[in-house]
Image (cartoon, rainbow, N blue to C red; front, side, top):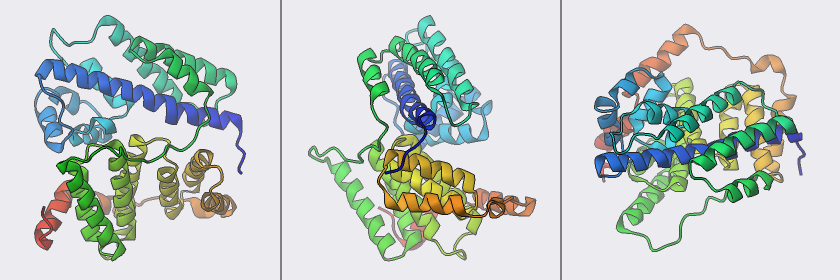
Length: 346
């Protein structure tokens, strides 16, 4: 079993346990406000995202960063991080019956400030720093409706990988179709038909509502991108798309060890050994007895540091950007075209 400095575990506990919990509280608040305003639930689709950024959320969209534009456009509230969700809640006009109360507004502003300061910190927190930040965030979450008892238990619990178990309740017709599509994608992957697998995974992502299933699909599609031959897609573009997908899996399931392990492998392929080592360490904290992770971590720690430096030239950057534009900046658009050519439509 690996042993890690308590300060490092404190940091991980805040970043991947408490802050994601805070993000979920804000996401649910947004969904409730949206339902009250529109008399219909947020749809969690590309179409919903497009309607939002072209309509009532346009002013928010045009003033935010490129990465956050992508998140808003996706329509997937579960992919909105704490910063994005805070911005939407604070700036969106929900109408007289659903606008934030003064207490909600102050709580969200304070939470956003604490989160910003935390992001500027190093990857370690001593017990005093950890307790201060935890208690400050917990106090805010309680004001937003979270359970004080649950937060106390969470603080005392060990950080371990979440179980990726799906609800075993009687499946609906939609969920049966989703399972069939995922299995079809897995079959293509096993047959090394990686473009076909990517197309099916992308279709599945478009209709999936379960966070765990969605994280698994993003993870599967990430591996499929990495498995493509370099003549099918530029090597660096392949890594960019794979990293984007596994980052989404982490946002959905922050304490899933395998997602951290896989993004560590991507960074290792890019010779970014510092980030690779960081995510292998997180994966090992979440799954302390995993020999495969231990071996990967040992490997990146013993690799010569000079080989870890990779800088994209302007030409390489422009090549990646050009392909992204050709794909429309969207996995969905690209996969729809591929499905049409291959007759894989549902």
